[in-house]
Amino acid sequence: MEHGNHAADRNEELRRVSAEVADRLAARGVPLSGREGPEELVELEDAIEEFEAAVEDRGGDLMVDEAPRGRTPQPDDPHFALPRRGEHESVRDYLARLERATDAVRQHPRRA
Picture: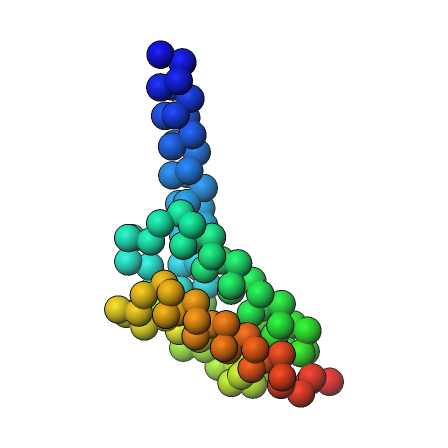
């Protein structure tokens, strides 16, 4: 019986953490289908944090560069805007596009 409870606790914890990550992604304006697995949610959050770190390293201001959910971003530099995930874009495709955008930000001249 104890094994069953442990597994149930672990599954509940995974659901809770996944919901928290999904909420943070949604707050950043990343649309989710609800079919993303826990690993995909973590990969998305990690990739977005990497993009944001690159923007900050180049002198971008995330408060200006990223719009609240449902709003259109008006970045001080378009290179610093978080790429929008397409409505039917797979997690894999979005991650690949986000990685290219992060690389482009790293090549971008630093803002004063």
